[in-house]
Length: 166
Image (tube, rainbow, N blue to C red; front, side, top):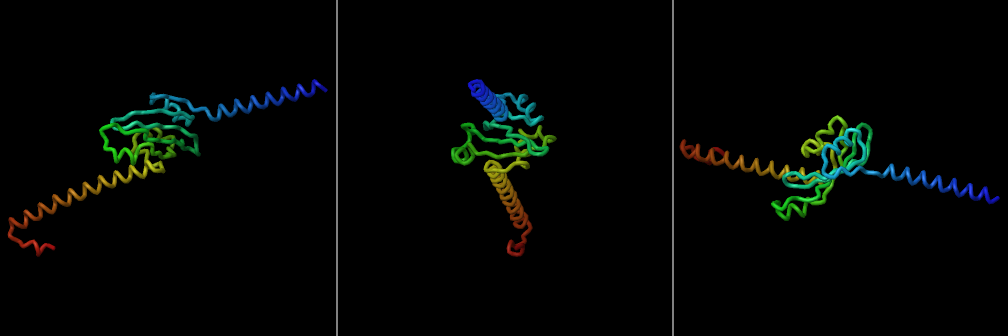
């Protein structure tokens, strides 16, 4: 009778050990630190990994969450902006995230924010789009302003009354 109880305990402990090992394997995320190549190697095979990369203006963290069909699901977080960026923008954008489903064939474009954002959703992507639209709006307004000045100059030189143009 004692042998049977001790055998059951050993089987139960063995089962728990297997479950623990399985959970460790499932949740393990390779920490690449700041090594971009290490992360890209994991990205090609879509193995869980994370990396912190600093650009001219910001520090981003990238974490491979797993695979979905032929896409690698990656979480991108803007960790912090450099000190030369205004505080209002910092408050609006720091710690924001986006989840990207990058096709394996496009994995080299992950670090190109403009290319990668086509595959992403989330608050960080929305802010990037808003900033792009604001820049485009400013460009259009400036271009229209310069065009209006040129038209005014041409009409003044030609003697055509401005009221006939509108």
